[in-house]
Length: 125
Image 1 (tube, rainbow, N blue to C red):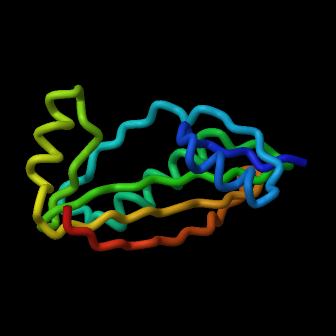
Image 2 (tube, rainbow, N blue to C red; image 1 turned 45 degrees about the horizontal axis):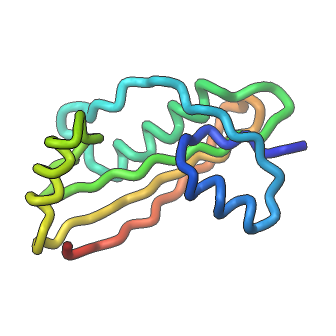
């Protein structure tokens, strides 16, 4: 039975395939990816990963979803809206220490308790 990968990331798909995992990749649902007031970056990434996994879960299947956020001085940088916004973000990050946090959710068939984790990285661009 393949693992359902709720991700549009070609890299995540490549890593799992290289590890010998039988996957069925699906596009994650279009869920709102807005941080709640006062929500910490790690909590935000976890919530989005859980929401993605929950939206595509089906009985009898494992679902893996993940989310990665970049944050600078505690401020979450969302997904760029267009090329100009992406350039603005890269300029803002250039030469500055920032964090990249990934969270994942592995969920069995709509079960009530997803598993979560985080992988923080600190970068200077």
